[in-house]
Length: 488
Image (cartoon, rainbow, N blue to C red; front, side):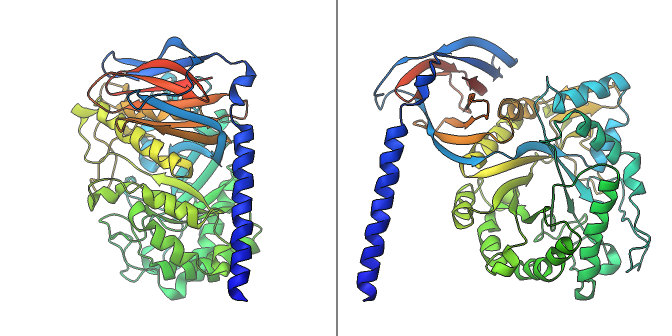
């Protein structure tokens, strides 16, 4: 009887897949019915030193079947996947303190460069709750041992962070603005090591006090007209760092979410806030997600799964396949890249194209594996890669030399911008592949109907390629170490 049931179920499944395949074939070849024949081409190239340079339009001709020897990027807008929540970066204490040192006119330039109409279209802002490594010192928002949280006050943030967040918010379209926060550590007295630094665990007796702390933070920021979209439970919960850090196992994170944080948010009418689990590297994300979210009573409180790119400390390369596996396991949870940067800052290397390629490689692969939102680390740092109170100096897309009062736009800025400037919030990723390993590509369909294709050549040789879309192709050039965006 069971065997017959399975046979019937399998037949129904096969019929369903066949029907979907037929429907897909019926929809194929629809793109060119719009009458589109040309596309805008924008390129950034190390070889020519061009940045967001406009090139001759891409013109399409019939090309039904490419050969194996043809270099191609294949795009099929009829195959649609996840929608984009947005792209942005973190406004940390460091970023906001450096911003305060910039002359007013250059501050306007900086805000426009990231968030304005002529900029690269950032709509996501992440910030730290309590101090992190990119703070000038360690701090919290309460007095020691104040379990009632009556002393809770975000006055510290009003000097630098909140003004910069509000400056960004002012020019971002309100319907697209997404602000979320992450804690690096609870106050020292809540932890097993009595120290905000060097790991330690949140003591069981303070689980509820700590959950209340998130609510207080949301309330204080929203009083200042900064709507909170979401939060991560803990930044890098498996890392014992020399800076602010706190360890949670998957079971501990699940317990805190199920018994304390989730119910506390809902009780305070914050059911709409997006709770993001993990917020650490790709290496363990599948294990963490499957363990933390295995109980439906825990899973109901979580909206997303966050991750970083630093798994290369223990691996030779990024583990992008873990994203796809996690996305397949939890299609109802969005994937969000919550942090990444190039470490070991060296001012002499701020114009290396490898900085941009690091971002391009990660962003393209992340989106192709199912990611819906992407957040860079510090949006701005100084000529030392800081400030950072534990000496963990890093690169950022824009560097401000406080001595010469100059803003430096690195290749990170331009490579990020080749996606964020043209792919708009709520765009939908569409089918894309290449037949050469030195070309990386991703594509999105904006709500306006614009098709945006990003192609990156990380190789040392120039190459021509065919941008092939449903039976038509345009012959384009990809210089060595370049990235380009084609908008149709």
